[in-house]
Image (tube, rainbow, N blue to C red):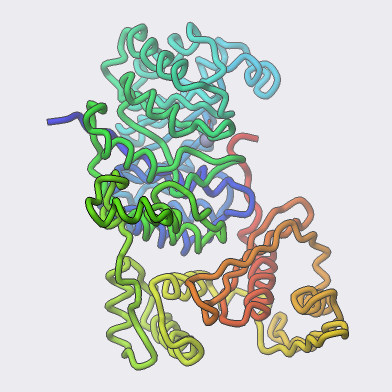
Length: 512
Ligand code: KIV
Ligand code: ZN
């Protein structure tokens, strides 16, 4: 029997810290259920002190998830820890994760604390958390740039205080694999009570080494990896869960441990994260990119037909790629719709949402005869936010674009329940429709990103539009999907505005 490698998913916490990736309570809940279905061991659901919205999201995840441990992040203040414990109350299995920085630069410049004060804070925080649960994790933030002797000292102290997991973060993505692996080996060897805790790693991808560093740590004794779906996370992101898991699974000749993850759910989770956040997955992304298992070169195709192992080291089905992706059509009934969604791990919150979703499915099937899994994912993602709470609602639009003429758009929106009409010219039809929306809203936002992605192949594919806006320093993503990309653009823009105007938009950042 191999040792177990614990998979700690932090998509809902560190992943969500990525600018523009913030999720609503319902979106978090949906993703948490998908992670539970994939048999993730620990789900870090959020940072409850950050905002009322995050507190409620963690609480909702703690209520709904039964099979995975639900974890909440807290700085070392008692207020943070008490709030995390409160949010985790309904959990079947709860973990409190507390952290404080240990690198010289963070202690001097950010915390303005002496090393002794930092050790005291860490020990007191772990003791406080232990009053609520036996399952306490401690992270010395910026461990990748901390002095080894000091790390040994603080780790020994927090284990003595009751921490059962010690997580070593490479917060700024500075480490190199051979060096990070050696750090983990030395910590386990030098900390006298290291056998009383699981050593974990949490690597950021600033130099593109998050997965390599995490795996080097596993080869040197780490038995928990913190990671995110699609590698989502602060700046360049975190280690990608799918890459970690499939490396360990595929190279069982090297690794002394294995995960118990249900890998066939990986693609579903990847699509769900992409749909919720509006961050597309690049086609050549390992494991979950559209081309990850596509063999274009003739010589490769010939080899794969003769014997799959000539060029394939994994089975596409093992990570959840389906060969037959054509699922439903115009004549499919409500039951077939519901069954297929269930097979994909997607569910509507209520019977009313399901009915609404089915109506939109029928509308879509009228426009585009073949409905693929990707279309269903987009459909469900569109209904994943609470429409009732949206201040701005799309009613209709008309755009005229003619050779030699400046495109012009007219749009009707409902704003705070009042129907309003606006219009504008633009450099192109998309520009015209965005200006028409702005003529009614005047958000003064700056468009940081506009991207269109076709959800499936073919000219009848739905276009999925992602926009990223900067509103007074707050970065917000919006997405919309439709067979008409101008409508999708308007939807995406309105979606971002609604998110910005949501009372849940503001939150504190754990590391600032
Ligand atoms: O990157 C980091 O250091 C973190 C900690 C809170 C674990 O996210
Ligand atoms: Zn992090």
